[in-house]
Each structure stands twice: as C-alpha cells, then as structure tokens.
Image (tube, rainbow, N blue to C red):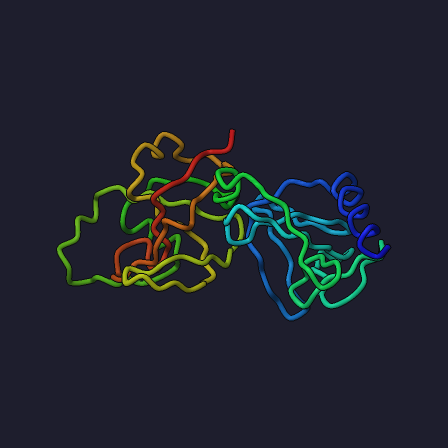
Length: 216
C-alpha cells in the first residue's frame, strides 16, 4: 500500500508543481541558500524545478517566504526535503528530465558597454594593472556590467574551476555584441564554456564569455 501511495503522489505533485527548470545561480549568505533567477527575482513560497548542473535532470526545491531554500525538513504542504533541499520520497530524490538546451544558459540582467582602456579602469574602480605595457589603450573593450554582483562558477585555463563574485563580464571575443552598446538587456550566458583569465587583461578578473544570447 505504501508503494501505491508513492506512485499516486508523483503525478499529482507534477501537476500542481510543474514549473520551469530555471537557469540561474545558487547564492549562499549568512541565512542560507537562495536562488537568483538572473532577472532580478528569486522564488519564494513556492517549489522550483532546478537543473543546477545542466545535466538534463532537475530536482525540486521549496523556497520559504523569505526566499531561502528549506533543508532537512517538512515543507508547509507536507513534503520532505533532504539536506540539499531536494524533494525526496522514501529517501529517494525526485527528479524530472528537462531540455538541457534551455537550462545551460544562466540568465543575467545588465548593460552592454563598449569602452576604452581608461573607461574600463574607471568602471572597475582599479588602478592600471599594466602601467608599463605596450597594450593598445585605444582599442574597444566589450563589457557586460551586471545590475548587481553575482557569484559565478567558471573554468580555469588548466581545466579546474572555482567561484567568484563579479560585477562585470568580458565579451571581448563576441564582437557582434557591440551592436547592443549602451542597452540594458537580459542575456543568457553558457558558463560551461566561460573561463577565468590567467593574466591582467581588462576587464581585470572578469570571466571571459564565449557563448551568449540576448533574451528578446
């Protein structure tokens, strides 16, 4: 009888809590984990299917009224979540398949700017990290200036990866994006093919983006 109950529960849950598998960013602060949906909003008082590692399989998480993911507890609608916040039945994490093509992009809000060397330094609020170099200081640098700082995980040149909080992204290898100069947009970024710079090129310390789209 217990197994029958679980089998009936799954489709009922799917009907009432079928939500997009958002592509955003998990963020941890002193109060817990919350999910930045990349458009200036975050889920609260709701369930969300989230494919956090873009493997085509999403887990379901419940966010309380303050927007924090509930963990190791019973949700207000009497479902259990584990230590990672994922919905479980009989200690088994419940999942659903999602379209990886739709979830591999992280949606972020910001402004695209085409700037000169000194302007980039001003935006980042830093001194020139290359004062004695022969860098062309009149060439264009393409930046995506985030509406607010974001903690992103990207790869390194040597194949590793780590997370860092940044205010700008480097779009220098995407010259067609210059057409959006000065525009505030929502854009999708494939962080799986982005990487952290290993030198002092500008924008300093910003992840180098190789694949993105403008969400129209």
